[in-house]
Image 1 (cartoon, rainbow, N blue to C red):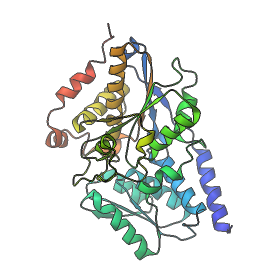
Image 2 (image 1 turned 135 degrees about the vertical axis):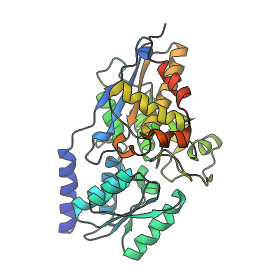
Image 3 (image 1 turned 120 degrees about the vertical axis):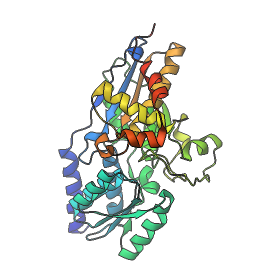
Image 4 (image 1 turned 45 degrees about the vertical axis):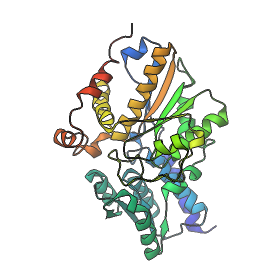
Length: 352
C-alpha cells in the first residue's frame, strides 16, 4: 500500500472521529402523542457538509480508494443534484483531489456556491437525465474517476454496521418507550440509504417496516408497483435530491415493505409546517419524508396501533431560500398550499 493511500485512510478516519453522530428529535405532535404514537426526526443536516449525503460521500471515497480506482491526484467527477456533490467536494479537498460536479442547471444556487467554496467546479446540463453520460465523458477526458453514486451507493456502505445510518437510528431508539420502530420512512435518491436501512432491519431481525416515499416525476414508485426496472421518465423531479428519471442500480425494491408517492405540494407544505413546529428550515426531501411518516401515523391511529416512526431531515432549508422558501416561487410552481396544510394541522389537536 502506497503512502498516499495510507494517509488518505488516516484523514478519512480522523474526519469521522471529529464528527459526532446526528441528533434524533421526538417531534411535538399532540394528535399522535395522545394516540400513543411517537414520531422522530433524525437530523442529518448537522453533518459537516450539511446533509445526509456526507455519510454516502465518505463511503464512496473509501470504496474507490480501497478498490484502487482513486490514487494521488486522481480527478473526481460526480453526477449529482447538489448535496452529494457538496459532500464529495469536501472530501476531495480533504484528500487534495480535483473535483467536478455534473448537475442540472436548476440546482439550488447555494449548493453551487458551497461546491465552489470547497474548491470544486460545476458542469451544468439542462435535464437531469443528461448527468450520467456527461459525467462519464468528463471523467474519461480528465483521466479521472467517475464516482457514480447511483451505481455504488448500495454497495459502498457497510449495511451491517460501521456507523451507518441504520445502526445509528436503532442505537438511539434503544431507550425510547417504543424502542423498535414500527416503521422507518425514507425517500429515495440513489436508493442507497433505503437499501442500507432495509438490509440492516433484516440483518438484525427487527420487526420494523421500511416505507420508501417518492416525489412526483420520479420512476421509483411506479417501478416498485409494476416490478419493472426499465421504466424511464422525461420529467425532472422538483424535489431536489430525490426522485429519478430512471431506476438506479442502487435502488433495491426487495428490501422495501411499502412505497408511497407524495405530491410535491404536500412536500413543500410539510417543511413549512415543520418550521412552525420545530423552528428549523429543512429541504424539500424532508417534507416528502415527513408527509409519508404522517400518512403511516394516521393509518396506525385509525387502526388503534401504538408505536414509533422514524424519518429523516436530509438537509437544511438554508440552501433553498430562493425556491422552497420563496412565496412567489411556490405560487408559480404549486399554487396554493392550503389543502395539504389543513391536513397537517389536523395532527395538532389531541386525538379523541
